[in-house]
Length: 292
Length: 258
Image (cartoon, rainbow over all chains, first blue to last red; front, side, top):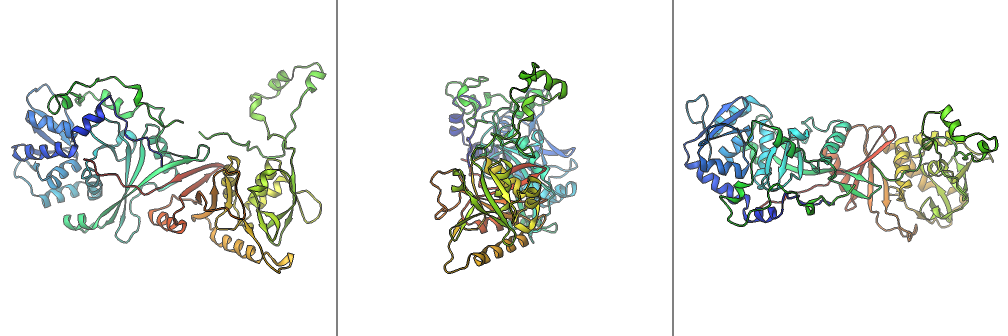
């Protein structure tokens, strides 16, 4: 299997990432969020969290949620997906959630709340948890027509390597999810993702049963990982990524006016005192190594 | 997307016309433009072969016996049975299409491409049209392609010439059962291009091709087929209206990051 490895967005970014392991920054977030009064509130299908400056920085560094652009300089406003909210509340055990502006909710009630809004939540949460618990940064895959995209570190430092499709099957092994049902689904996913230099990762969540409680579900549901690649016999290689298109996530960040574009100041100011990287300059050394 | 391809135009190879237009004092390019709006390159046929072999179709065994062997391609094509060279219908189809083989019936009549292609699609000979298209695709790129699990060379001791195909006919019968519509089947053992390839000692294949039917394979199918292949990498092939595509579904494990 030929994979060109992570594509860092600038010189020294790999070193910055290595010097700032995501697990350590998340540990800092856990402490800060646990001590904070802030609680997440349901907003649409997502959750809203108001943050003080230190927490704002940590949310940005760990790339949880999307920060909303506001004129309020002293507070941050983050929109968290259901998976992110539940992961922070349950797995990292640091986020408080308020339902109906009344009481802080406990984990089982929050679980039932999430499931009542989306019957597939357990499956997606299991997949999200599988990836985040390995310290990969997990973001929405809507831009690429998939469920998630995963990054080796912060999206400002590195391009995402995998486009993730989540499928699922019951405890009996019977396929339940409707993903990649017909061949054009497969061709479409591979073509779309390879065109933006991402490998397709199929996460198969196994052992799902609707009746499971949260602990049962997490104990009995397992996740299998398979990559889907197109093999090109003419070049006798697996084509995991093509290198001719602009990164879609770069375009998205620039065009979404409602979301603050994360700048690399988060990596330079609070965590590093080294010389600043050359922000914004694409180094030609980082041209992808795979050729057509 | 893919590399060089052998032209897939059906029909006999065409002789290029040279000089006729000039003899008449006409411009051949203008003639083409008047009669046909397509660029001339799109109408090219296969290149003419100087080394043409001959084979005779043997209906009882569903293969052809090579009676005149020309060219070096036979080092990596056809199977040896008791010292004689035979080829399967997909090999015949490919070689006939590129003009490297003439196929005779049990008499001296040359079988045309239409009949050969029809036989390729006839499941009685262990082949389907999609199977043939996949074979042709890989063979034209220089891979050494054999039917999965079938020996390249077999020697039978003390057998009469007409009875030494019992093994093969059984094998074909098994294949017919396997080639159910819509099912996933292991079809080819593939070796990378290799000038030292020996039919008597081919070694382990570089990978095995599974032809998948109407639906993408599910996890259980993939695992089952991988187990059958043991450690040889497995590629999945989907053929759709002549478009042959291959996929791999390797199991991976994203590392736990620091």
